Length: 124
Image: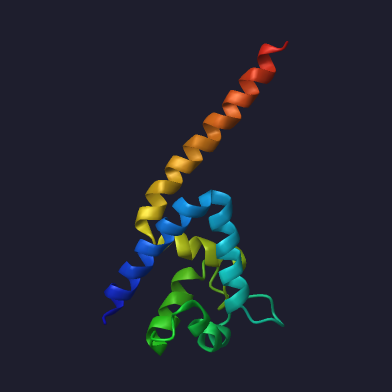
């Protein structure tokens, strides 16, 4: 199985989870994933904690260079670790279909907020 096959499987799974759980449920599941992968003492994902815990998320077949690449791609501030926010951003970036859907969710949330605010303004 090539790396692309693995990532395609992942890309197909994340939107399914999002559609099933909604935006808040997806974020909760991403946070749970972060908790499984993180170094419990440091509160962040390190390369060592990713190596140790990858099997918990079905990533046991990833090679060392793939784990290193995942860390580098997600490490937005180049400090060698992944914070919870960096991990969530990485998961969205690994799922192009989910990124497209996230624009829909953002628009829906903004419309909802604008609708609520316009209702508040109409009471003046």
